[in-house]
Structures are given as structure tokens and as C-alpha cells.
Image 1 (tube, helix red, strand yellow):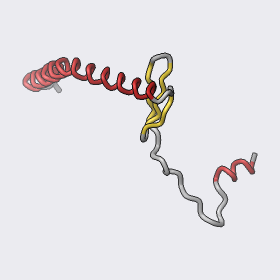
Image 2: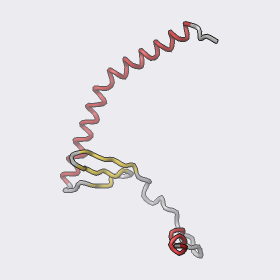
Image 3: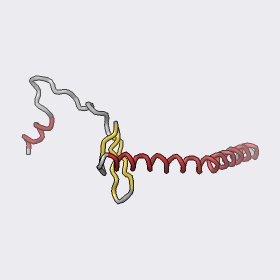
Image 4: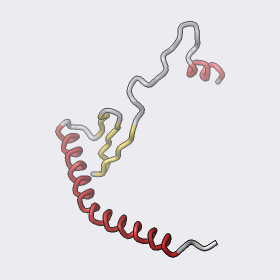
Length: 95
């Protein structure tokens, strides 16, 4: 079953429009990324550290490169119920 030419042309036009939009957007995004990277590096240096948790992110500066890891929210751990052994304690007991 062949696709009508008009559908192919429409898809090509959408791809062209998307390409053009994103090509124009790229310099703006690159500038914003560079500015954010510089601000993070400055913040780490002002605090005299190469590693820091900021909210839900771990930020590490290694060899002048930022490494960012998204972490689970603080306090996400399940609370323990009285009368039940903690799962880690059960695993250690089996070993």
C-alpha cells in the first residue's frame, strides 16, 4: 500500500520546519547551558568543594567537568514498622 504523495510532502514539510526551528534554537540553548555550567562551577568553588548535593541532584566537579546525578528525594526511604525487621537486616542475617 503506497502512501499518498501529499502525506509524504506534509511529513517532509514538518521535518523541515522542525529542523529549521531547532537549528535556530541551538545557539540559545548552548549559551544557556554554558551560563548554567559556569554558575555551578562558581558556586562549588565559592563553597570550597568539588562535590555537593543541591536539592535532588548530586553535583560533582571532576577534572573541570560537571557530573550531575538526579537523586531520589530526601526522606524517600520507607519508614520502619515496630515488630518488623528491616529488610537490610534480614539480608545480612542470611549471609
